[in-house]
Length: 415
Image 1 (spheres, one colour):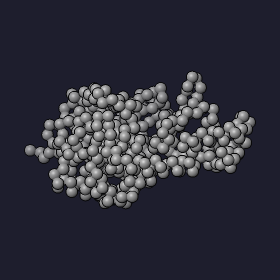
Image 2 (tube, rainbow, N blue to C red):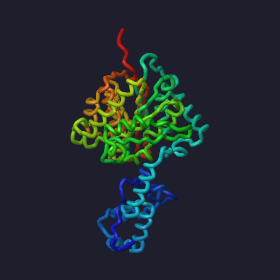
Image 3 (cartoon, rainbow, N blue to C red):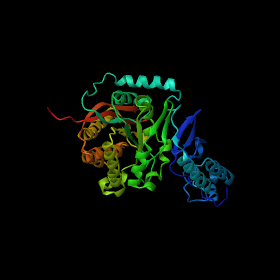
Image 4 (cartoon, rainbow, N blue to C red):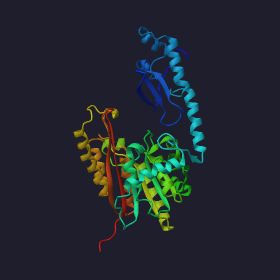
């Protein structure tokens, strides 16, 4: 590395500190998949990395940490390792990122990112795993009248979220849909709001067939460039992937439309309705137009929302540690949020989130707001059945995630 090079750790990057044999280590991961494997560094370099912000040259950083024993050669080697692993903003990363985006865009199918990690990659083992999860919902009384319009499922890992997944999907096998719109949270930042893909989704049980004609129609109405510009977000995103094994097991003959929804941060901070933003308004208008057209052709369409709720605790940046009393208060607030889903009231939902500027970090809020808006514009009134509310709490790591399972059913007229 040249002495005048100004190392800057790129974004987004996940950096977590762990202990290994009693010593601190730093683990770098790329949530978008540009860097194919994690990078592990000695934790003693953390103070040095804190100034890898593009403001100082390698020589200046070496001088700053000279008293700690850091030479120019050490700083240069550290920058070289980060750059070779694509964790720095640099010509190397710029070239490689373009290559990765181009390669992903050319693929006809999206390979599972979590098979063998979040769930079994072996079909027989996965079927057994899913069967045990689905048993958790077998005792629920699913509505016998009124077809299912939509489903609210978690996107937390199967281990912590098994009850929610079981409650959500156990009732799906008796439903008859030819097409599912699968909405998920885009956890990685993009200036764009909605992200489409024409790729089929591979699972250890087979391949979910994406309705390419629907995606093309929607993209042409919404704007092809912005619909696919950040398609790479689909590559690693788990919010849709964690729905796919259940869908492949229960509805292998249906077609699917995968849609990632970005954050509503600016709307919440400014307390401004998403409908005032053209990129939101045009998307919802466009998808309603395509749905209406498909319904006239005889399609039966269901919506799957892969959403979690609160993310709280010091793990997520909160100052106060979690306590059982804290979790009781969170449940009270979460049930107020769920009530807005039950009442099919997106304005109530937005007000609930905006009043404390999303203090609970409800990552599924933009997705659920969009889904409710679609139903409203299609004049489809649903009856919601909340099957279960759950809290995954780890007091040791001070981390809690909450989630629920619900079915949205056709509201039948009173007789």
